[in-house]
Length: 315
Image 1 (spheres, helix red, strand yellow):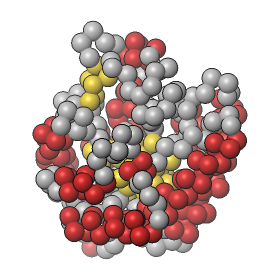
Image 2 (cartoon, one colour; image 1 turned 180 degrees about the horizontal axis):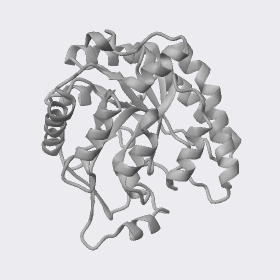
Image 3 (cartoon, one colour; image 1 turned 90 degrees about the vertical axis):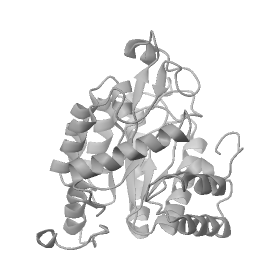
């Protein structure tokens, strides 16, 4: 859809109806057009298929040494934020990234550029009623270099520099934490109070591969062949511990599924795994309520974005 354009977003929405999921996360690259008529047709297709659109993934390169690229990616992020609000309404989230780890850009300079860009995006996010969610990311498929904030210390430095907890948070991806050399459940403990969305995936190493070899292959285009996507719950992540941490922290928000590399059969198995986990760890809830985020919204004088907006004592 994004690179070869051999499938339209409308064909994907139709295809995805086979999955027992309530929402459909979209990616900026799926929008070959961004005019209101096109976006509204996407919204109509989502509604007809019975899907909400809670999350939009965008991959800005705010660390690019070329100012014109940074400016263009800022404008693109804003455009996708507006599309998020148009399709998902109040409470939907738009992913934001740091950018690529360009070798000529120092850590200090990169952090400065990223924090500045996010700070300038926040008033727009608040106006639109959407949330910016920064993902602990590995590498966009079209990038030459891996994520600037791939390492947890850089990621945390950026996140902790953003005081706003009402319009900004973390999109947690456990597999990307593993690729960065962290235990994914340990990493979640560091960011749990800022998590507003989650992107579930599971990965395993190809035969003969190692995490050290994977990290050394980061100069290639796209994902390393040493890394294999697979059915959620069958890879390197300790999902029972992850789900317990989320539930104990009052996370009852969206969890999207990053799978399907090996076909819709595995995608369906991943959906089934997460539906079973929802029953086991979250009591089957579909409330879409994140306790820490709701507390931040109240502190900022903003209304709740929870789909179940009853007071906690009534639930």
